[in-house]
Length: 261
Image (tube, rainbow, N blue to C red; front, side, top):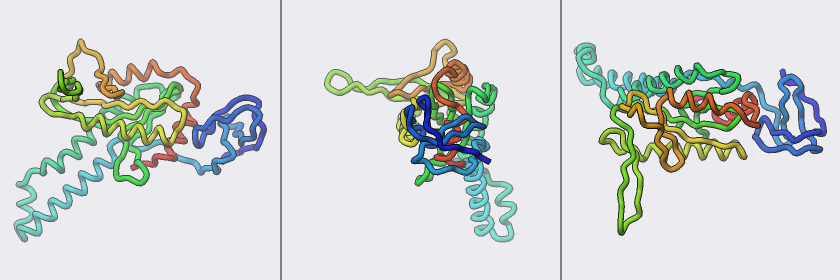
């Protein structure tokens, strides 16, 4: 149970609820147990869990679609429905959800090797008012990383279009597949987190699993988005653990704003 006391701060602080700066000599609620500050504008929050299984919502969607596909086959073939189900392959649109879940699980397994006291990980978080979700959020004392996991085959690379009479535009390809819309997607996710947690740096990341990376090349940068592998992301996060932000309090605040999907 939280034991807070209303005090006048001697030093500048940061609200554990909304992330806003709380200047010295202003009144705020102080929790001596967790050593966190809550501004007077934020209501007291119940305990919030920051844990959630990676890929959970993708697996649920896969199971729902698989059950719906099987039900459709049984209805179509009547007493031969069981045979039809046994002989039928999963539709590619259904199987894609399982592939996505596996990708999220593999990214989470690698990031789980980071020191949890320095890097707090939140998996499969729902964006309020939307059907969309955020695969992973990593919180360090230096900022927040919003991570979209993708399991695509092929080599990630940038390709430029335009030229003399048209603006030069970069696009992200994985193999022959134009994946530029993924950049827009993770930028939108990062913007949602930035709007909810003010004054904290937010970094969007596309993390590709099973892609054919050039081992000598570094991460790709496009429109402010880092495109990388799970292991390279783990190494990058391990170097981003020094900063002014309280990791546990920020993870709790983000978990409250973005509940499990």
